[in-house]
Length: 182
Ligand code: NI
Image 1: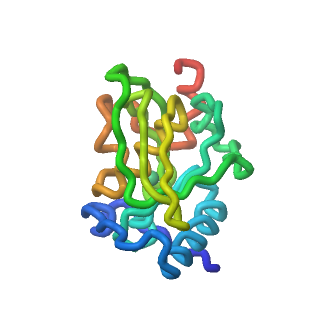
Image 2: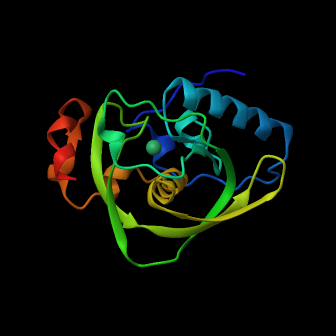
């Protein structure tokens, strides 16, 4: 396994639509997934999409604890890497409820910043894991937020493009000023 270099906002690989994976269980996909998981943990991210490691394929990995508040604004916070790991290949998202929820987001490709994003709070997602098994779940809250953030990467979308209020696009180091308001 290897730790891969993470593409940063402005690299064209982050702005393009990633390609479908022909065979989710192929050995090269298994290797990619292993490297993505190692890279995500090393970088202390909650999730990672293949375009973020310069591979334009529809593959995401994430670790979403069941319950989590908007504590992602804390510099000191460590993501819970004991939370269940999900590998999702060729994902499709369906919105279950038009009601939106807001929360602070960050991205390994947009280092040092946080932004407040409103989005659907209840979704269903479906795809394959790297053994070719179908993955189909519903998700709410932080879980739903992570899935949508990672899948947006596959369509060339970074979270700042989802923001409605750019006054809430801030440096991590200033996040403490906002925590009491949210
Ligand atoms: Ni991201």
